[in-house]
Every structure is written in C-alpha cells, then in structure tokens.
Image (cartoon, rainbow, N blue to C red; front, side, top):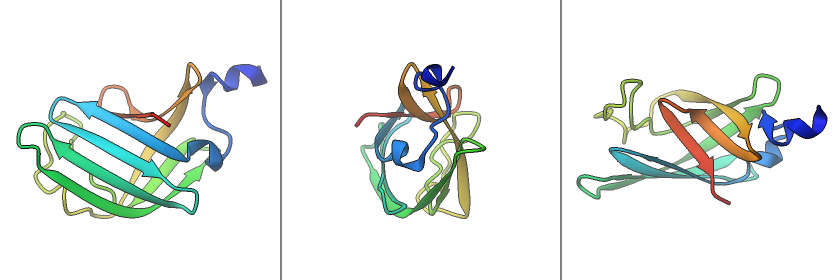
Length: 119
C-alpha cells in the first residue's frame, strides 16, 4: 500500500512539490515554479494575444488535506473555462488539490485547471 502512494494519492511532504509546473489550456499557458523557501513565481501567456503577465507570492502545503494554498496567485480561468478579465490583479488566496497520478505530481482539477510537474 505504501508503494502505491508513490504512484497514486497525495504527496506526503512539501519537499515533493518543489519544481516547475505547466498548465496548458485553450486560452492560456501557465508556468508555475514552487520554491523551497515557500515562495512561487507564476507566468501566464494568453494564446490569442501573446500577452505575458507574471506574479510572485507565497505557498504552503497541507499534507493531511492534500492541498496547496497560494497567496497572490493569478486565477486566469474560472470554473466554466472562461477568461477571468481581472486575472492579472491577484486577490486573496487560492487553494488547489495536490495529487500523485502515475508517479507524477499534479496541482488542480482535471476539468478546470491542471498543473503538471515538469521538473
């Protein structure tokens, strides 16, 4: 059972989350870098206009809940997969589920926003 958690489930430690994640959906591509000191960098490129916006903020991981909380995060799309017109002005906190799927870490939800760990 413990070995299967390496391939499916939630990350056990925050250190497993450090690295670069990519979200690529119809209207935008995002690069999200989670750093070990609890900060992140997020870059968003709108596909239609090639406009690029960036932000930096802090993040933390709750291994019991399997959730990552971001502060100063750009929420580019909403749950209906439409562009959030105010995405470049981060507000409040965003919580995304973290999961391990076939040994790869993912942040977010399949049908809405999904970041896949690249490195």
